[in-house]
Length: 537
RNA sequence: GCCGCCGUAGCUCAGUUGGUUAGAGCGCCUGAUUGUGGAUCAGGAGGUCCCCCGUUCGAGCCGGGGCGGUGGUACCA
Image (cartoon, rainbow, N blue to C red; front, side, top):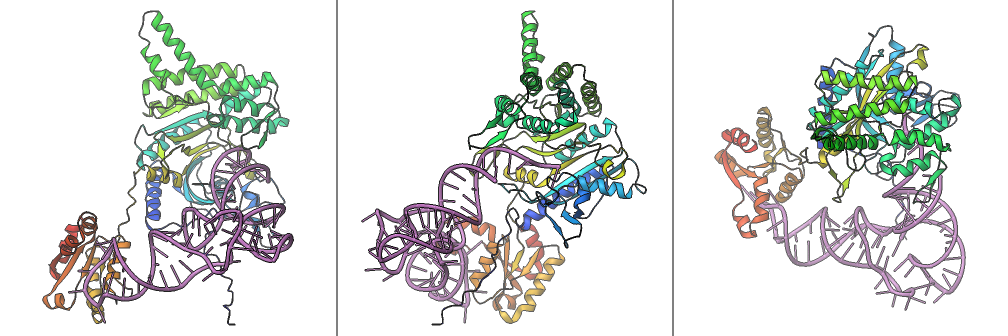
């Protein structure tokens, strides 16, 4: 019999890896973007908004499979023979295209900032989405390390501008040239060693997670993890592995050198306090420099640079890298950005293949708890570096560039988890509807509030059940409700119900007490605006 | 991609050795109460038990396959 026809309904669900952002989430992010843009602008960078869609060809050769370009990116073809199009996966590749296209009209160096969503077609995870915001600043057209130093300084200013206190973050700087020098010493500089270099790079990047032995395994035969998955190794010889491991353990070695210096000083009858403090100016787990104290961190940087010089030996490129790091440190010091905030850290490599010089990364040094109360490793909130070959793809000419990218969503999540951002929604004042035929009066009250700059609205739902109107106001997080029945209207007054106070009383007081004290005041209509202004203050 | 765990109401989950009509809490809706939020009380709506095949007189439960989710790992321009 009239069995209900099965209607196939669409699932009301955002696609995997995507989500919706409500109210405060949107306004908070906008406030953060504005704060970041203000700093970028102050440093002389120009705004740029480029298209969200690019041709796959322009986006780059970083796609693993030309026949299936939607691996990792959202890409499509209009028809069989048409060009592949894709949503941008970062803001750097589009910048290279924009600069190449408009280079005759743009100043050199070209300094621009850009912000907006980017898309990646990858497996989503907790706190990891397929659409997220980036906020970048880049300088195109100069090879000077002063550009790199400037970006590091600006990154420090930016983090402080969005509410991260000095000491709650550290910016780590390294140089790909140092790593390339090490690879050269290990005999991995040939064009045919591309694959090995990639594995080495990624292995070093995982030091903090896999530990020294894990990295060593990846450099050699490979590594089988607890989940049963096997990762292919680079298959290097023992001598090669030990060269690279010396580099990998550079931070630990720096600690040991400082330790020895301290004991030597003490055995000679000196205090050795600077050496001891420098020894401890690092994360106890990873031995990565942690900033925080200018003198000891500076001392540590000097030791690290000296050690790096020894590792790269006679490699020209390696020595160049060490020298650039020294220059950057000096430039930053001169501007007042000491090693308490920006440190030299050889363990920073960044996974991306396109970096050619200095690379940098910003990390938060305070603990962040997740919803289960566990302390969670937050990783980096911003990163960047020098990429001298990206524009060359278009022009054929060498166009050096350097820049930084801030992961805005991550930064927001960290600040929210830390309680630095107040998430309690603040709703509008609700003008309730007591008499349905007096809507015009209510709208008029509401209009007066709006003219005075008070966020307000008239209840537009079904006014039959008055209780529902207050429930609505409650759900909106409204600070107050305005009530005016026939009685009040005749006397030219309104009832103002303080919902925040009321809710507080409801928790503490008994039912009877609460009913008797409705946290409500009668106010003359003419006094309503000043009354509310005082209440909302 | 690989490995493990999971899939029952909007949410969190029970569900006995395989047995009739699948339950609870929370949430939602209606009413007690068309002039007052919380609480209480009464009532109500809401399910292809992820899908398919098989075993069985009989499957939410057993077997096989698929799909989906999740955690780890790999990749991440």
